[in-house]
Image (cartoon, rainbow, N blue to C red; front, side, top):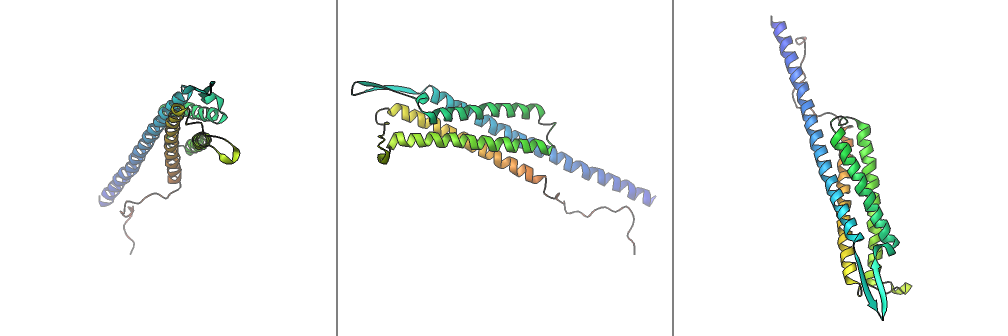
Length: 211
């Protein structure tokens, strides 16, 4: 009777202890994907707003009876900036849909997390490259470059430069959202290689102690 009771209590303890990590792991996966989806939605909104502001931004002025128009399409850097934000926005929508549709099915697959890591790293590099190109052009437009003989133009197209700055700031915020995504996915990937945590209780034994 005693052996049967010990065996029954062992099976009950083993079953309950095995269910607890599973439920805890599922909760962690749900929290992770929720944070991922929020950051992706934030990146989508910021990139889309940045594109809309930059594309609709233009100003026409007259300098010494010469008509001068400022538009993003006349600058290769600004065109690359808009294209980079467009790619980031489109890919963010795609990965958001994949997360929402297949999140529960692929939550335990390491290759899916590796795919997210590679995607987020490429998007992070792409958007910071677009921001850097637009920042360099904006700096020259604001302050000029005396050694090259380039004069500042923002004194004449102040509205265009100010609006471009707003678009650039939104894109930088989108970059920080993707930076957070990259950091979170790296932390998630590292958790697969960390040893399981112990709850501090001794492991159960089937038989009695041997003297």
